[in-house]
Each structure stands twice: as C-alpha cells, then as structure tokens.
Image (cartoon, rainbow, N blue to C red; front, side, top):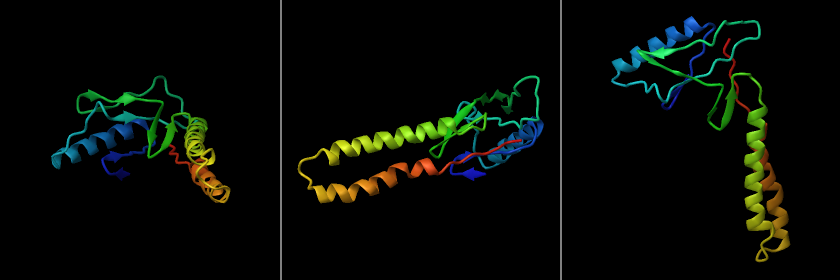
Length: 141
C-alpha cells in the first residue's frame, strides 16, 4: 500500500517480505528514487503460530533496515504485539490534553457567558474523543 512517500508491504514470510523490498527498491531506482534506509522501519507482526529462532533482518540493497516493535502511522500507534493498548493510551492522552487546553481557554474564561460554554462542551468532548474510537491496525502473518 502506497501513501504519499510511505509504503506498507505485507507478506506471509520473512523471505517473501525481503523479495517485496527488493522489488520495491528496484522499481524506485528505475524511477530515479532512492530508498532511505535510515528512515525505513520494519515492523513484523507474526502470527501466534509462527515461531522464529531469531528476529529476521531485512536490507535494502546493502544497507540493513531498522527492526522496530512499534511506530506511528497517520496518528495510530502500530505494535508488533498486535495489541492496541499503547494506541488507546496515546489517544486518551491527546484527547485529555486537548480538552484541558480548551478548558483553560473556554470554561474558566470569565468573558464568555454560560450559554456559550454549555453549547461548546458537548461538541468539544465529541471532537476530543473521536480519535479514541478509530483504530488502524495491520496484521502481517
């Protein structure tokens, strides 16, 4: 899946993923593009039935790629454990922070009348918590 300058590759085995990476690198090179290995991260989400002796290492041309256990993508935190805990915690922290900033600017402001504050509160809560209801995960088997 290609999104702007990001690509997400999915495969069923480490060998298949390395083949996809090699194909992607060749295709990008033909178009005059270069894969920046220092910015490229590999996140493996293995099926519980798959047991590997060691974590697979991937490379683009001759450069090794970074293996990570979690990264952020479009506002979501994706983890190798396939759990949503860190994603949910992050979204709750962001919503709480946004609501706290709004509280300081609106609800404690003496220049706004009470009817305005009453109309803003439900809207601000639904907007702040909206991100907590939308999660994006990918499972690489």
